Image (cartoon, rainbow over all chains, first blue to last red; front, top):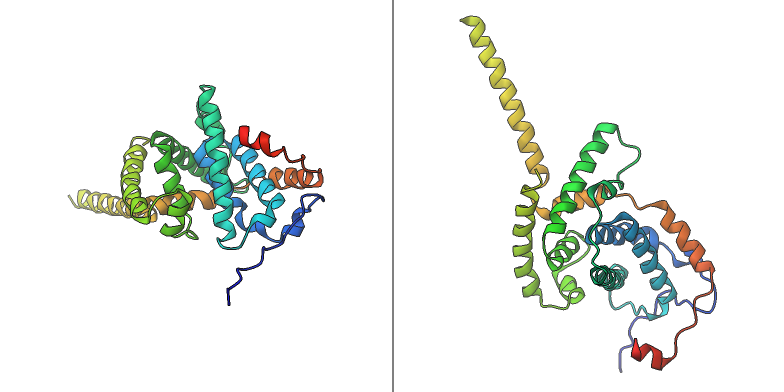
Length: 185
Length: 73
């Protein structure tokens, strides 16, 4: 007897308005990961905010296409990566460049002490500068591998390459990032 | 002489403490992944996104373009 795959989770009709609360904890559980990927990949808080909104809107409106074969996190990452690639391509076509550190540094915890904010801002700015200095492919791999919920196989599937290729490129990506990060001191 | 020795001891202690602090900072991020995880944990998702998402979900979605338009795009 043929095995039947898992039923689509939370099928949602696009004909009717959907409440965020109806989508369970999808946003609560994954918004930080998706926002962080968009923020550091695009290097612009406003673009990252727009991208996160668009990714979740697309995901929730197309919830019926989510087959449950991949994790929700992986599914959201796939949408986010495509979206970010498209945005970057559009920017390059218009010859635009990433924003300055001053705008990147606005995404810190509001409740921290001034000293702590300064430390966080400085570190965030240095990380962004280093990420901007390495090839986008390396940047994406590092951001994905820093998510503990993702395995190398999943990263390979998301970036359309073998697990061995992911390992090899990650080795070079770590070295490239370390060299770029050292220059930010 | 004794005073100099005391100063030297204090200096050594300060250096040791400084070295310890530096090692702690270095240990904190012993890999790129850990550094990025720390950065991600410090990043706050702007609350405006959830609000915008609620508003967008309450709007009817745009009609899907015809198949020939999707092929051309």
